[in-house]
Length: 222
Image (cartoon, rainbow, N blue to C red; front, side):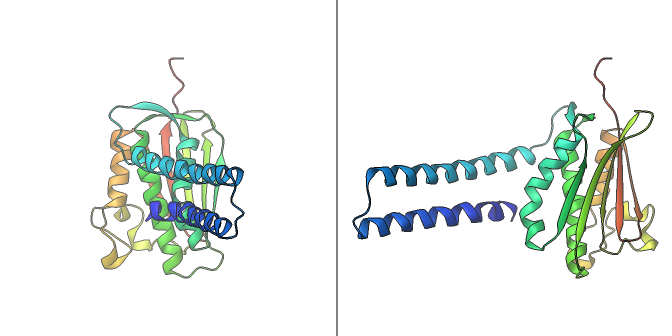
C-alpha cells in the first residue's frame, strides 16, 4: 500500500508526459529538444520509483548485527515512508529532535517499532474521526546523557485504562477488535527491551496515547 501511494504521482506524471508527446506530434510541434526534455523527465520519474523500491527493500531487511545508528534519522526515514498514508487522512505529523543522538542496536528493527506505533496512531485517529488529527515524535537526551528518549504521541483519545500500563504489550491484546493481531506491540517491546537493552512504556496524555522509548546513548569508544 505504501509503495502504491509513493508510485501514484510519478506514474501519473509519466502518463501526462506521454500524452503531451502525442499531442505535440499530432500538431506537428514535436522537435528533438522537446523530445529530449520529455525523456529526461520520464527518466527522473523512473529513477524516483526505483529508489522507492530500494528504500522499501532496505527498510524491511532485518539487521544482521548490532550497529550504531542516528535515532532521529531513523525516525525521519519512517516518517518519509509512511507520509503518503498519513497525508491521505489529513493527519499532521511533526518530528522534533536533534540529529547526532546515536544508539547501538538493530536499526531496521527499531524502524519497524516506530512504524508499528505510527500505524496504530493513524488507525486510531481515523477510527475515532478526530478533527485536526495529529501525531508527534519528540527525541530528547536525558539530562545525565545516559539515554535517548523518543516519545510518540497522538490526539486520538488514548488507550483504554484497563490495558495500561502492561496489558497493552501482552501477546494477542489489541485495541482494534477483529482487525488487530495483538502481536505488534508485543514484538516492539521484545525488540526494544530484549534486543536493544532499552525500555518501551505506554501511558495516556490529556489528548491521546503516548509511547516512550528509552535507548542507551552510544558515544563510541570514548
